[in-house]
Length: 400
Image (cartoon, rainbow, N blue to C red; front, side, top):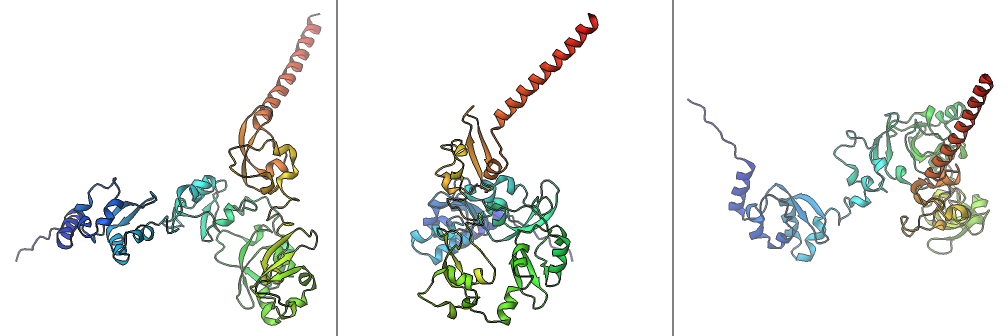
């Protein structure tokens, strides 16, 4: 018996059959025709109402996105009114993906260039928010080292982190590594981090050997805790805030009304208002557990929050060189002097404009690159003139 040949229909034929059987998008959902993007090859009259083809759509705010016809029409069935159709469909309006200007690629192109193209799956830098907590993979552009780190720890303006191997920050010593390994071990989620080359101030995941608690701390904070797990200590001894006299004096108020420190557990997640014991003007909000168990101090004294003591306003010479327009509404009093934030500058001598991190100008005395190049060139001209005079003098002495 001869075999029958089976002819598979093309996607266009399947779409046309679906349109004939269930009606087109224009017939069943006329309110979606205005969202149909003009870049689509076919008109909405040629697509079935529940086709699986991905086409381009545009929302009421002008955002262009790709989505299958079936998902859009099914969403339209759930939201009958025209006002409820656009926002649930658009991924930008729903905050599932950012605008390009607010994405990692649009805001930090140098960091996005280190985005690992394989280990992050199908996720692209243009689809990632700059303050995302998602653990992502990176490849260093200098040493090609692969490591994992949340996106927001790479984009923090005050204390950004990068490749652990290329970091110039102080590393952990042998004695600290031995003391740390008795209580903790690096979690497997810290891809690319080694205990021998770990910077002291970087936050990483640790696993408590005793009870397998997963904590997120730096080596400096663990040393303040005498290499002990804060969660184990909280379970072992149900301490109260009254047992921390320094913190009790710094507490101004607690969320939920007047509560005495003797009735506040050290591991409480209630927000409290705190006042620095060194500078009374430093007032901030933090949880009880963050201060008692994690030994978190004043964010202003640690240069994690801006104040009048650590702001760029203390450098009057640099204030004159802040660009008047390219920095937007950013003021010198809103910038931390030790920040790695990129700021635009304008030279007061040659009017040259350039972008540079704040700490390079406040801590390393970085100046205008054009003026520096001119000074080097002028110095070289003087040196060449002196050498030429000496050579000519020697020649005259030899000929004379």
